[in-house]
Amino acid sequence: MRLHFMGCAIDNLSMDETLDRIAEFVRDGRPHQHVVVNVDKLVKAARQPALRDIINRCHLVNVDGMPVVWAGRLLGLPIKERVAGVDLFERLLGHAARQGWGVYFLGARPEVVAWVAELAPRRFPGLKVAGWRDGYWRPGQEAEVVAAIRAAAPQVLFVAISSPKKEEFLGAHQAAMGVPFAMGVGGTFDVFVGAVRRAPLWMQRSGLEWFYRFLQEPRRMFRRYFVEDAYFFWLLLRELVYARR
Image (cartoon, rainbow, N blue to C red; front, side):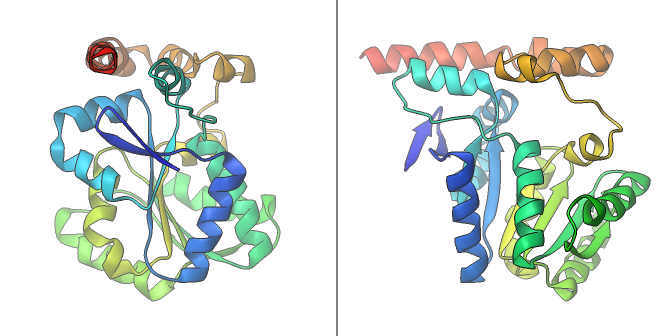
């Protein structure tokens, strides 16, 4: 069931339903793009129509962020649950190992993505790593990146670069790469290899994972969480006013 929230599409699916949908995409074989929306993504989409259009064209859109789940329910949207990108990443690796799908890791620092490519098959025996590449390429090298992924022919592509760059990259090149399922995963590679610690489970369930991330890098995250993302409350207020009307 597809809902619309703050101008963006949301697929109201649980984690298991999401995995079932991805399996359908892989069986279909045609390119499909995935995206998660959280507070930061909704704020960026409200200010960048091109990003909002990419999100709304995606074949699968999950909610990653308890504040978005709560805000949606406040507006009467029956959002089932948060499907966090980092959780979906690990569940999907296990699913790919069982199904014999090839996966490609794109993004992050060279040492991190190399570590992911080495660690993932150890953690998920049977996983086929079709290839990997770091996220530091020059604009003129995009055609080379796209060609390498197409040649590797994975069933699943994970893209660990920042927003909105990953959404723009996939929106522009997904058809040329021909990957049945492509997913932007942000900083998930760093979490997977232990370079960045994830918040305790009680903070994740309480919607405080963002605060834990802020405590890890306060200088870098202050502007994002306390300046840029504060615009989310204005967007929510506007939606509440429209809903009452």
